[in-house]
Amino acid sequence: MRQQLVQLLYGVSISSDLDSGNVELAERLILNAVLDGLEIGRAGIWLLNEENTAIECRLLLDRENGKEIQMLVLPRDAYPAYFKALDTQRTITAVDAHTDPATFEFSESYLTPLNIGAMLDAPIRYKGKMIGIFCCEHIGGKRQWTEDECSFIGALADLYGRALSAQENERINAELERANQHLEQRVAERTRTLEKTLSELTEMQEKLIEAEKMASLGNLVAGIAHEVNTPIGIAVTANSSAKDKLNTLNKHIDSNTLTKAALLEGMNHLNECIKISFTNLERAAKLISDFKQTAVDQSSLNLLETNIKDYFENILHSLMPLTRSHNVEVNINCVDDFSLITVPGALSQIFLNLVNNSCVHGFVGREQNRIDIGVSIDNDANSYTITYKDNGHGMTEDVMYKVFEPFFTTKRGNGGSGLGMSIVYNLAT
Image 1: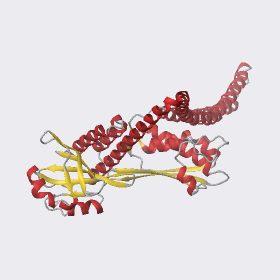
Image 2 (image 1 turned 180 degrees about the vertical axis):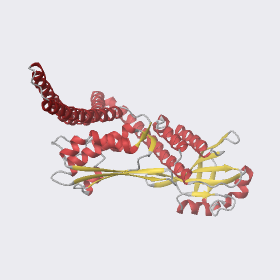
Image 3 (image 1 turned 30 degrees about the horizontal axis):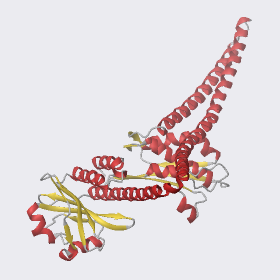
């Protein structure tokens, strides 16, 4: 998907209007994104009535004429071909709306007076059921709709479903509030206690999630500290040996007993000590640098241009103490020069939790453990896919169904918090 559409989707997805419960605000936000992204003059949201006999316009923005339109109704029996297409097709991509089998019925009464030449309709689904469409109307002649544009509209339709869920939640919350107000007349003290408990539980959950992130970082710190101690210890030993050899050479010099052979042997020894010291200090510096980058990124969710392969290698280098302790071979299959604008902090947290999950759950009691991370690029669709696989025990169907639920863990009582995969899900989605 081209960058402009990605940025528009990102802007809509993080807008507070989407989750405010005010669906009218969300509708305007999404329709303006449609108009900007597709560069069209008209876009509207149409919902099926309860009897499924007609489709009603919730809101239609007409930038061409500076109008907002509502309460239009299209009955099913007046446009049978269009409604048949709605019932059977995922999207309606009418390059020429006047002749397309799905939209030709609108030509005389709707398309011609408004100079509409092409239409793109995407279904809106809510709770597994199609409840309406996004209707995108191109002013002018024919228009070829690209896969990017179809995906863009489909993604916005999913976000509209999220707005409907927020509205439903708001309605349910309002009903609960009214019920609570009625109950407060009789059990006011108990209600206050329950509200306080709920607030404490919410706060505790937030703290537990943050604690889980910090615990993961703490495990990383402990592993890196242990890993850094080894090369530093070797460097210290090499420096100590070099110092002893220098003392020996100085004694020979002071006593006028230094021979050429002793000098050459001493120089060779010093060179070897310096080489060992430099190699191990360089290794320690690399470990610390990778850890520092991983730790900084985990505390930030900023968009940055990132070389994916290099970044994954840095993450996995920081996780080397964990993977080495479980005899894990990690392979990254990605082209060297693949860079994109992404959220590296989220990627770092996601893969830290995935690798930890593989080691703690998947590789227990196993040998020849393997993790494969693949990055495939679809240049035609302007998209990429990251695949994470391990050869561990796998999951039962019941565990797979619950794996992303907060606080679900199969290691209860053995240090498992049940928040790692929930964090992965939240960051990914």
